[in-house]
Image (cartoon, rainbow, N blue to C red; front, side, top):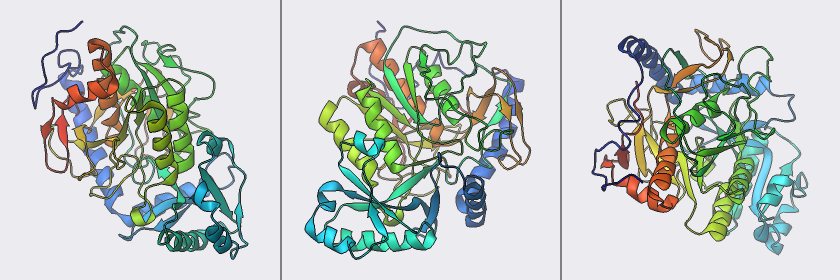
Length: 454
């Protein structure tokens, strides 16, 4: 067993094993691509016109898909749109059964109380969904007004928030191909890490990465890659693949169980993510990685994920560690699930381990790590010009560089798992050890160096 000394602020855990594997020429080429990637990431974050154009296109391209969440924009307090599921209101069941709430909602015959579906059943029936017969932006505003009225009277109620990957999907700041790669080393079997994301490609790589085991493929967690336009990679294709490869680089022995919860464009509902969290823990995972996040109308905590955390705490106490991306919103807005208490919120740093301009930050941030130009495994396929104005083609065993807090969170999850295996610690104890390596940065929590960036 490794003889560990306590981490000192600014130290690099696992430094020898995680040195940059790229040649100087490969690194220089990747640096040029990352500059463009970061420029696009910041533009997408701050340009409302770009966001609205992307949202409009995404909504139109998926409008006839019953297997994808349909969403509408709902204005936030800062003027930027939040995304919510069309016509859905969520109320804690004990409040939905209250006589006052029932009488009040009876005045809205267009609101129908739905029977619990599979996801709501996983949440032990603690959340009730009401469906509005009119699914559009006007109905979303009306439902938000209803929710505000009920909240003023102590009712736990929110709209069913929709979680996008990045500020608006992955378009314009997606991965870029890299000629670099890291050789597979393998390792003793370690912790189970649940990844709640877009899925895992069923491509059998020739470089030994992402094999089953230790990456579990059960027939339900496949990233469908091209199922929307049937030719080009979906907007969020390979997101789960990148996340999984990052975890494996930090902790090759982790048993990774992917829960495909977000669709090919990188969107999923609060209820779907919440149910996946509970399923993951009941399936044996003690570490969860959620490289996703959403802001909500009126900054209210999403009821689904809040309920999932409640159930997980009741069933596992402090044993489960949940790691989440802080968000790419370039401000201090609450972004869930990262903003929940006891969730490890991971913000992004530059390649020099300095505070990034594009990352969400603030008092909710636990740690931060390098999240610009992170090298990881990717998928095979052709990009659409709608994703990248200079679309790329990816062959077998591809690697790519990606930027965003989505790619900082799995570094932290992997590091916790590695300390668990090497030191025989619980995930909560391992988190405490990892934090000892952190260097405090205002609004960015404790800064950690794990994987190199670009």
